[in-house]
Every structure is written in structure tokens, then in C-alpha cells.
Image (cartoon, rainbow, N blue to C red):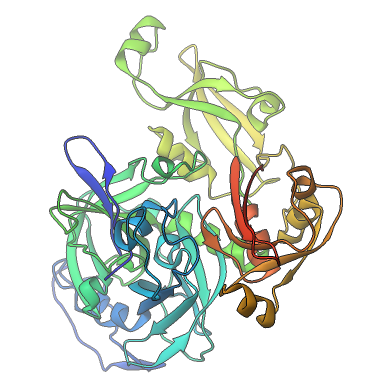
Length: 475
């Protein structure tokens, strides 16, 4: 059973996350790792997907996860993707549960990108390659705001996919979805790009108000188990990570959605380099520009994204952007919806400068904007910075303590100073088992989760005397 679907109400249907040129010429296959690569001829007919398919299947892996249910199994996990499969309140399951999805190898030394919801709360992650080799995977980092996770396996000379440019995708362009639906490994389906920059409120619908959604919509068949798999162009370049389907049944009925690689690449680079996503924000409230607003305010062209609010001390305010401005482009990339603008800003880090073109009084104005993070800073955010804010020294719980308490994972508060944990009443000795329903086993897990979270945070755990406790803190 795959941990890949949850009913999220939509318009008229339910949205489900899923696990989720003239002549053709042929050349002698080249061996890369264990993959047989076929040379690409740009003059191939667009309906010939052999190059892309034969190369992609070797770099797409099967991700099997194991979940422990001996803690808090009688209540909702808070993640509808998980709850859909693992039970209702009052349903106690003491045996570990297994689920599966897909992942994409992006480097020869074993870095793998997948969806966060594929590995969310997993206590054990196993990756199986197309050649049937199996590896234990370590979570390098996750970004709940984009539903991206980065894993690492110990391997060498592995087949991998190179990043394409999702900005260059055109409506009607052929793409392939490669993954492991229903545990059927190395499955390839084809479709076209049906739309770009789709916002479905899937992540924000789970209470994540800082979610970033700008999905590529395709009609390539994606089913349970495809989550985390590859969306590639006909050159075999990775252009997206398959994430969701629109369905009344939980299986494919016409449309699927992928995270564009423009978002994925930035998240992955940050997790590898800094251990936490360096997220830049413009500091504005965005709104669709509609005909009614345009008519009332004398706007001649119905294009761009309306600035409905500007936050104080923000990048936008410092640059001179005002309420009523209409953003037309970011670094020469046109934007016509909040999700498109959000996608472009998400490609950059705090302290980087971007060119923003706006329409004000039907005249174009250019602004140089130095981006900041949500805290209003241009400094690099490190996972260790979060522990300092908590005011605590954390250590992985000892095997003996975990055995005594009957838990499988935990991070213990061994020293408590001034900070958010002490102010909320947490005492020294407390063992944190979950944060926002995500299992933690190392201090780095705590830092990673909190570094990529804002707003209210639920901390669950147990004291050495066996008393279970819950705390809510603000980030």
C-alpha cells in the first residue's frame, strides 16, 4: 500500500496526492554506471520517446518506507497523506506499516530527490535501483513548503538524471512520467504539458501557510506509487517531480501534477550546501489581476500580478514597490499569476538582487530588489541557529532509554537555557519524538524541520518517567 494519497477537497472533484525533426537515427549504446545510454538526436520525431525512456528508468528508484505505530497510533498524524492509509482515530495498529513511492537519482554518488510526503514520519527508508540493488537511505533534508525531500545512499557510478529547464516547457510539449505505480517498477507513461503554474492549495490545505505551489499539469498517467518519480522531456532531462493527481477515485483519471525542477533544484542545492532551505521572499501580498479591478483602476492591459499589500521593512518596500503595482516580470521572465511569481522568487536566495518590472499608471518601471528571508535578514540560515533559538542542548536518546520507554526514536533535552522550549514549560530530560508529526532521531532532525517551518509547531514527546506531553511553540 502506498503512502501517497489523501482526499483534499477541490472544485467538483477530490485531489489526491500520488506517489506520484525528420528522421530517427540510432547509435551504439554507451555504458554509464549500470545504465545503457542511447545517443540523443534532436531531429527525432517527437513521438519517439525511446531515448528518454531508456535512460530515465535507470535513474528512477523504488522507495520503500517503514512506519512505527507504537506511539500515538490512535490519533490522526496531522498529515492527511498518512492518515488516509494508516487509520482513523481509535484504530490502534501496533505492527509497523510499510509504504512505497518513487525517487530520482540526481548524482553519481547517490543523492536522490523525492517528495516529502513519500518519506514523512518514516523510521526506515529502503531504496531499490532498477538493477534490483537495494540500499538504506538517509534523509539529508526536507522542505515541507514545497513537498521536496533529499535522500542519500552509499553508492558510486550510479546512473542519474541531469536537470532540465522547466521554465522552457511549452504547452503541448511531450513529457514522460517515470515511477513505480502500484509497486510496478520502472513504468513509463507519456503525455503533454497541459498547463503550467497550477496552484491547487494541496500543501496550504494541510495548514502550511507558507507553501509554494506552481505545478506542471500533464495528462501523463500517474498513479499511487508515482510520487517522487521523474517527469522528463524528450531529451531525458528532469523537468519535474511527480507529486499529485486530480481524481475522484484515488487513481489516475486524466490529470497529474509535478513540482517544476526550477523549484526542486534550488531546494536540493540549499539542503546540500547549507542543510536548510534559504528562502527569499518579496514581502508582498499577491492577487490575481481580474477584469473588474482593471476596469475600476484604469489598467489597460490585463497581464501581470497585482500587488495587494506591501509588508513593512520588506525587500519590496525598500525597493519602492507599492500597493496597486502590477508585476510583469522577474529577471526577464514574465509572470501572470501569483504562483508564477512565487515560483520565480523561490529560485533565489536572500541577499541576491533581482530585476522586477512593474506597471504603474500604465507605465513600466524597473526596480532593483535585494531579497530577504521571512525574518527580514539577508544572512544564511543554518540548522544550528534553530537550536540556539530553542535555548536547548539536544542529544539523540540512548538505546537503553528508548527501550525502557518503548519508543523507536527520540531526541532528548539534556540542557535547558533561555529560549522557546523553556518558556513553553518543557523540562530537562524531555524526549522529543515528533515535531509536526514528523519523527526525529537526531538533533539535526529537529533543526532541519524547524528551519523549514513557520507559524505554530506541535512538539510531542515523553519524559523519562513515562509521562507523554505535547507542547505548541511559535516559530
